[in-house]
Amino acid sequence: MLRIDLHTHSSCSDGTDAPAELLAAGADAGLDVLGLTDHDTCEGWVEAQAAVKDTGVALVRGVEMSCSAEGITVHLLGLLPDPTSSRLVATLEKSRVSRKTRAKAMVERLEEDFPITWEDVRSHAPENGPVGRPHIADALVKAGSFADRAAAFRGALHPSGPYYVHHWAPDPVEAVEILLEAGGVPVLAHPKARARQRLLPDETIAAMAEAGLFGIERDHRDHTVEDRRAVEELARQLGLALFGSSDYHGFGKPNRLGENLTSPEVLNEVEARGSIEVVRP
Ligand code: AMP
Ligand code: FE
Ligand code: FE
Ligand code: ZN
Image (cartoon, rainbow, N blue to C red; front, side, top):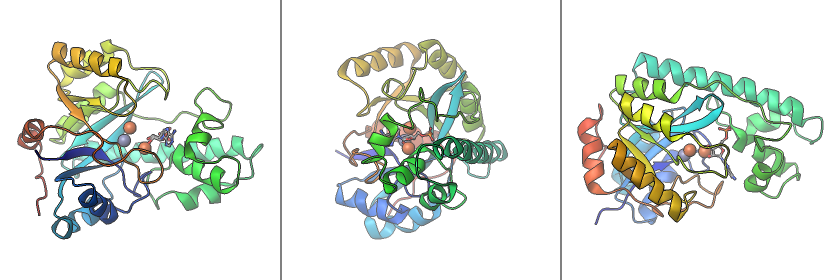
């Protein structure tokens, strides 16, 4: 049985392993296929591709697009898209620019109560990459204000707290269209991860399916047994393929590579639909 984990992050977004280290960690975890899906960037692809031969781990190149449905954050995986597609490039760029403005605005608020500066946050974020709350969390941890990223997320970085600021992100239905236009395969990430914030209504997921959404994550550590059952039922109704993944972030989160997997049949279908190839050793 092939071990396929299609949703992971590198230090090009908010993971802690460089892309080559991520592939090596994939080999250590016994993975056959790994998907690199950094938030709002394809920056890590080249380094990851170069590590395929040495590690023997096949690479699915992807991205996790930040989306916003009337204030509700939605994460949409795009597997095997053409990275030169102009609408995709422009959308990812716009998200990254807005993320930077937003992170600066959050730091301005946080500075009043915590000993951190924009320079501290910037030093934890990838150069020209997407800046997110994980990097602000790193600065808060370094300053001694919180024990780890998770504590910072429960505290100062919580969406209902006074320091939170929204950023621009495309509507999820539009993001499905953008990914399809790029020949990518759209997959809704962790739709029932309720600890994060308000959940996306099933009607919006149905609208995404109508627009051409291919799959949905069922097996994810932020989903309870009941959540998984609900996703399975929704997928059956809407004709969506089921995915499972680790959503690994290195030591930034407890998620371990290969803790949830996607089936070879679903990967075959992804490869048949994608506009670029799976990079094989
Ligand atoms: P942002 O997109 O900047 O609002 O930040 C959300 C990101 O933070 C997500 O992509 C997660 O990977 C990460 N995240 C959310 N909760 C936690 C947590 N408890 N610990 C570490 N990272 C988290
Ligand atoms: Fe993340
Ligand atoms: Fe996500
Ligand atoms: Zn993710």
